[in-house]
Length: 79
Image (cartoon, rainbow, N blue to C red):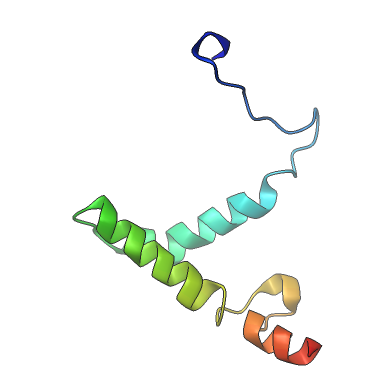
């Protein structure tokens, strides 16, 4: 990797939780969306994944980390 000019991205030694939130998100994305669809093109997949993240996951999907309510409900409670 070094000869190609790349730097390895690694967590701190012994810290397996650095990447846990992203691993959890990617698992959710795959099980709720990607594994249920067949994409003809990369553009189609990109559009579908963007719509899922911005239209559903970040707005209406209930999240365990905030008491199983949607992010919109959480924002309304905080306001």
